[in-house]
Image (cartoon, rainbow, N blue to C red; front, side, top):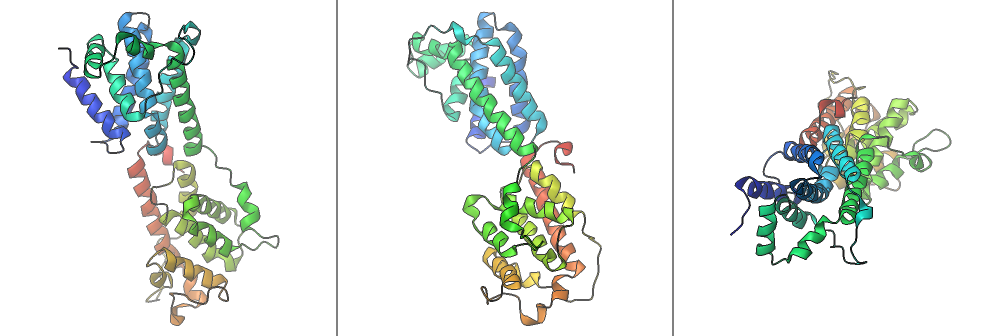
Length: 342
């Protein structure tokens, strides 16, 4: 009875864990190796074994591309996938397709694509797949169609390209200028807080980044400073899945303007009473800027003085916590140091 090698059984296990979002270990090295192996096999695509590998690796790159695009912030990994997929597309000849209209297989989902892709890498694996999953030879051969494989490679390449731009490129937030900046130079801190509050719209990251850019521009009235900084801070603290380098680099630059060694004689600062939960934070900031519309605040009267809000030590406390979050994103998302560097 034909069967896969132990290495290929292990590859299915490891890649299945990744595409199911439960990797057994660090996924970045394995995915890098996958992309590099795919690229290295292209030179033998004119041989029977090379054709089998072309099909298998195309299926595997397609199955795993969503994870690369959504979970790992690594320029080098994106580059490896792009090179492999560009090579696959250059090798394939979709015009060679002789399949009747409508007979291409449906694109497999990530889990199915991992299993199918590994089995398709070798002649033995194909025989085992046909036996295990009751496929006829012609049904299995349909996955070798170069037009079908070109479609998979293009889907994966487009996904990688779009994610690469979003994760590492410039983020256009010009549409927020009219929402958050008034004509007289004042900032609408309440509008910014309302945007952060609508977490289902994924607003936390854009508000944090817009706030950081505004902070760095110096176009901030004295009375808006703490509100703007807290909007940035809340955007960081409340983006639990982490923000990509296209955001984190500017956030780190803004946080670097704070003197972390500041000292004072205040026993407490306002934010220590407001940071219990998301709702408490919101009420504290909105009350500070619009007390009539938000009369309740978690900040007691004895800590409500503006001098306490603007204390350099409170800024330092906030900045240290935000920098910890940024370091956590770096650990969680992976990538090279230069990907995250300011």
